[in-house]
Length: 459
Ligand SMILES: [Zn+2]
Image (tube, rainbow, N blue to C red; front, side, top):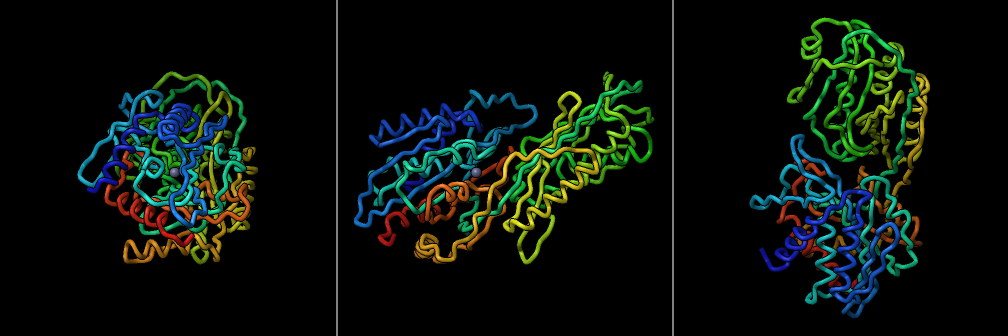
């Protein structure tokens, strides 16, 4: 391992010590502010805790380059873990080339990007043009950071976003998405029969924009299908349905409390289950209130009918959906889901279908956000330069990719006129899960390419 990689890893370890769950980035912004002061760099911090740090260039061609990554991370942990994401540092585990975290997500998404930017900002040895490093907040939840930054603080017209999870491709476009809440307002009734809590866990998770196929077999869907089977046999009353973390993530666990006088319920459920390697637990509990039988049927139908996983693939234009979260709030059921496609028309069409489904099942739709697509720019100079440098460093061209997972790029492009951009990164596997891991050799490759790009006189 060379000096650069060593320092990069030190910085990665250092920043992993600071809690940075989405919406709670204050301490991380403090850290960045301190870092800027220590390194005598100009910085600007806004009320959303976004931080911009600038570094003067030291080469002849000095057209500024914007580097950008999000500081927040998805915080998930193993079921028995006592980790407290508000105070505890991420416990890094290194095994040869692979880095992961003990019992929690790692935050390689996008701690890698953060560490690369810190490395470039502090280094006195590298050659580069003027650099503007933008660290944004709440990328994993609302894009609130990137949406509300004052971009008049930025001079550059070329942006390298570091939020990709591969090192053999660069991203030149990104899907549009729509996030909706599907809300059912029912009425709780008293039902006099035994109550059971059914819990599903250990379902394979991940980011729904990447692991599209897994998305249709998420924990919420699996549990809804179990209840549907029971409903075919006898009356079942749903009391509560809850699970999942966010619209983007594939739900790994879910629970539903039902009331029924069906006998031998445990065997009935277990003999019906098709999925292997998942954990299912059934406990008899005390519970008084439930939704009516008719309402229970509607709730289950809504979950099963809403568009999930791969919806259409027309000449590689993929449209997909995911139900990431379900909650019961008093006598309301709230489902949060996302639809994605680079074709705005296709996206709206699927959204309309979801609206019809919801109407049939008496669910109201509340739109949470819509992001427009980042349509690839065929004349992108930045893409051309980076691709050439990539070839010089790695002996082959990178694939050009249009990603299915949301990136902040389109949101920023709307706010900087004439912005040219790409997204790069290094390999991260199973991000947004407790199995998240990164690879030192891959980081090394990306840093080398990025530094060569900054050094090249062509931009
Ligand atoms: Zn990310």
